[in-house]
Length: 164
Image (tube, rainbow, N blue to C red):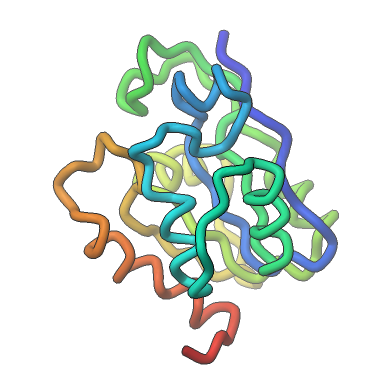
């Protein structure tokens, strides 16, 4: 049974980015989006015109400084490999409780369609929250280039009212 990570979150977070379940490399490294070809961290840093840090603690602090929380839709699952399509016997994280505990969150960003699919399987979308599904930053989503993924992910700047 694979087990997801605890959320990276603070009381000032306004956006919650939900993945599905960490991949093999992330689980091995105990880090969100640890695969070197995953575009997540390069995209997040690019949105704020900052140079990416290789240090994971710096990355977590950077997300929190910019009011972005990270978690996964699933808490547990069985899966061979890293593909979301291989997930079975899953259990959802307690996302609605997290939203009650962190009331400033106004937007949930799904990092890929699988995160949205599993969320909708276990939860009803709340009227007080905006939900946005973006292309997965995973290297398995090879149909989109980095720049194409980045162009979709710029919506985060709008959600946080960042002037570019």
